[in-house]
View 1 (cartoon, rainbow, N blue to C red):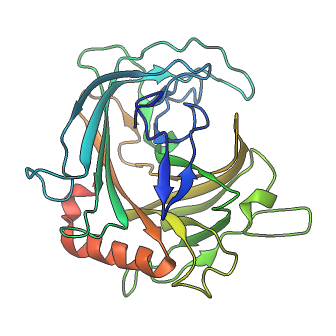
View 2 (tube, rainbow, N blue to C red):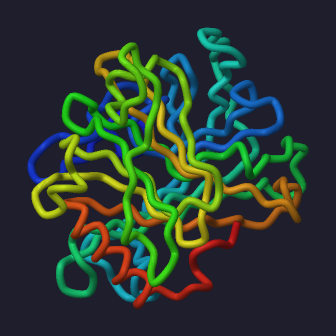
View 3 (cartoon, helix red, strand yellow):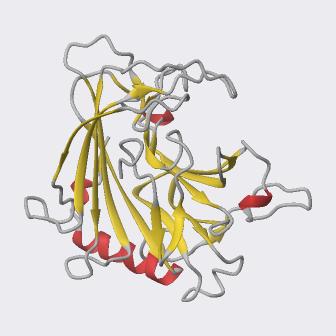
Length: 297
């Protein structure tokens, strides 16, 4: 984290580089938006020209056992920069530091307190007290967004089931290709977003097209949403790598924007390994993490 910007710039899964550092508009982070979209986009990474957001502080963090020390926990506090790209490709840079505070808390399972195949993410944003910053639209905010190397993690799956438990039934997530519908994201057209509507529970990329038939041998990376979300995947050509974006987005029909000066927090689970270990990680989280901590968004 924070090799180039205050984000997760690289992530390995079972010894393979799943998230390679491509650019500070990609990698693994949180991104929020006003009604202007990417033109007013307080982003953890930085602006579209590569100027990083400001890392204010780094502290210990434990989202699994609050108040206890965490051998693999960290929280970044960030002054976000405006990504400043109203249309693609249309980078205006340099993006201003916007009057918002972000917190990005990461807790990895240690194999003792929690399974080591999971990561608990606690992502928070608030408008700085008394500031004239534009309101953030919750339903345009990606919490988190992960860009994976699709030479490895290319096959998309999702889950919408809730009974008898979340994350038991996975389905291929189909997009278009020259030869017809496919869940191979590397064959999808570039910059086309495919989504499963809220309340989907999970989006996952795996290294095998037959991951559902090989639930103990495929290797996958998944984002899980306890309360359900719109989940999205998209084929992107990065600065260095061919990538697939996955993200989860929550709208709030009662309070659709952040107009106050309080922190708004969204918790997600990132689970890795085979489909079976992803299911087991979700089951552990549902049994052991407080339901009230998931969505404070």
